[in-house]
Image 1: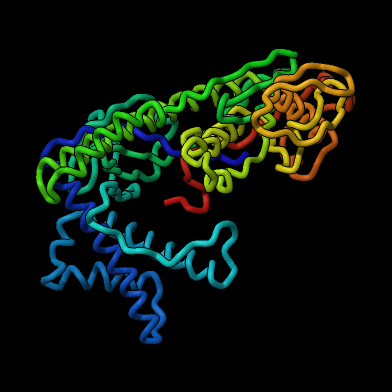
Image 2: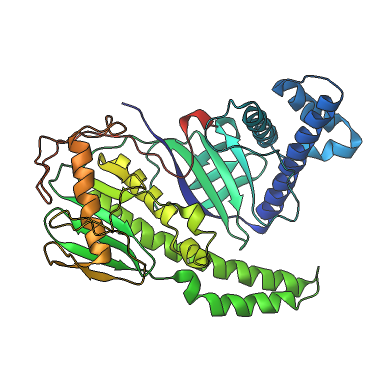
Length: 420
C-alpha cells in the first residue's frame, strides 16, 4: 500500500522579535534564490557547466565569506540550502520543457523573486525544526506558538513557514498519512457543475439535490471596491498605504476562506456518502476567457473537483471524470433519446420521444451517473485501478453494487517525487 504524503497547515503566532527573524530569513532565502538563478545564467553564457552542489557552494558557502553577503550567516543554513534547491528544480523543469523531457504543462524560464512580493515563504527539513513545548522550534528563530486545530497523523518530514499578504503566518507540515477506507455503500452519484446552481447531484437511490452557487466574490465586490479605491488614493511608500493594502488583503482572505470552507464540506459529504462520484470534464481555461470569466473563476470548479478527488482517494471511493464530449445535456435520462444541443437559456425541456419533463441540470447529472456506471461496469481503460463494480445491466437507472478497495489520498500539492 502506498502511503500518501500530504500537508497539514496551522496558524502561527510569532512574537515581534520572531517576526523580525522571520522577515530576515525570508529576505535571505530570496537573495540566495536569485543568486542561484544568476549564477546559472552567467555560467551558461560562459560555456561552463555547474552541478547543483557547485552552485550551492558559490551562492552560500563562498558568499558568506564575502563582506557584501556576510549577513547570510545570521539565518538558518538549512533554509538557504532548500531555497537553492528550489532554484535548481525550477531551472531543471525549464530545461526539460525546452527539450521535451518534461511531462505535463511546460515550465517557463525561472523568474527572480521580488522583495515587493507580499507572500513569502521558506522551508526547513528535519534538521532545522522540531515540535516542542506546544509549538514548533525553528532554527535561529526559537519556539513559535502554533494553533493546533487538529493533530498531526505522523511526525513531519519538513515544514514551510509562510507569510500571507494579510500579515498572517502559517506552518505547513509535510507528513505521511495512512488512509483507511470507509465501509462500502451502494449509493453513487453524478455531479453536474454550473453557475446558476453550483452543483446538481443525482443519486443512485433516485433522489436529487441542487447546491446553490454562493458567489462569494460577487457578494464582496462592494467592500473590495471600496477598499481598493482607498488604496489607490494613498501615497506610495506611506504608512497609510500599507494599512490600506492590508485591508484589501483581508477582504480577499475572507472570500477565499469562505469558498474553501463550503467546498471542503460538500466534497467531504460526497466522498463519504457515495461509493462512486461521476463528474464531467470541464474546459475551465476556455470558459475563463469568455464573458463569464469572473463567474467561472468565482465558482472555482477546478479546486472543488480536486477536493472531491482527494477525499475520494482518502476514503477508498471511486472518482471518475467522464469525457468532455459526452452530451449529458442532450440525452433524455428516461428513454435515452438524444434531442440535440440546446442554448443555455433553456433550463427545462420536454423529451419529444417519451414526453418526460426535465430539469436541464438534474437531467445532465442523471446522465453522468448512468454513463459513469456503464463505463466502470464495462471496465473502460483508465479506471482499471479503481474499485471495480460487479455485473450490472446497461439499462438506465439500474442499480450497481460495488466492492470496497482502498486508494491513496493526496492533498495540497505535495507529491512523493517532490518531497523535501
